[in-house]
Image (cartoon, rainbow, N blue to C red; front, side, top):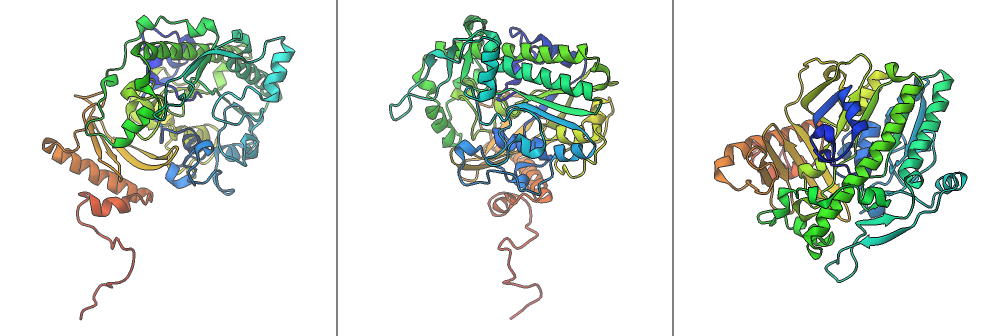
Length: 483
């Protein structure tokens, strides 16, 4: 699993420039899901959805603890999680890398072996990483040439990239793959079944890379995303504010091109580490009876819509994610059904012989992976609750259209066939009145079915048909009473 990873940086998803041979070989031998999405484009809530098989509104871990705005910071003690179910089947459990799942409960709290690597970015001061450097005679972490813009109040902006003064063997990514291989070797000799996750902290910004990866790709190869022409006209004002927060307009366009090229280098660095793990699976003779998945928690803007990072804007750039599954006995293929990160939970449970039903918002992908054609939803839902500040959103997208409800602002409607880069908000356009009504009513019904109380706002504000309940949730006017 990677963090903040754009689908369009992978060769197997169509990038003509970025070298990702190891992820590509995984895709070539497995199922590549072309329309895989995160349930929410923010780290901790998305990862909690994978852990529980539940949508964020249900598990209620709604924000990263570093930017928490009053939400829960840990799952409830009695929350269902897939590692607990696997442990009942005598599975060995390992998680090497990013957990980012709470303040008081870490990966070990859920039964995972591995170093406790907390936080949103590479914890380069962690004792285990420092011991790894010392054991291998490698130099310590040091960066130079930081890339920053200027914030609206004149302060230096967030760090976006820098040169890392270490060889590739000293990078945190190489360290994580090394520890994963060591854990794999232990599990392979035990004879018991195992689940092992390697969660890279990258290619999340800031992109901190050795020169060989920082300069691996010529910025001249970078075709800037068409949405870099974003004007924010007719869009929620928060998007323009986020652009200013991420200092996009304070840097020359050449800097954006270079940042994208460096991001590509980061992807290749991680791909090489994934290759080391895949090679070790082969060497241990585990390939024919081990399922391997590759995915990410969400995407990243990298200049799209004049934004960096992620935030309160439900664009494809940050909601569409890679999704690859190699399951023994299943033929290679590409699927175009709408699937989500949360669906990997039920898939893992079913493979391990566990009951997937407690993962209530998750559907096992195994029928799709095995080439079947089950009845499958023709739309997907996503949600957002805030980052830096509360900001509730709900989204539904189908084959062609995407509707986003923003209670504090204007709603959004995009025609992804005619406007794939989501530049034109068509919500107020009268020619799409029927589409808007259809999607709004469908979203309303799905949220009610789920038990997501966001629907209460929609009851009075939008065309949801005739209300069939008292929105005051009271009995002020009991049925049958007359004066």
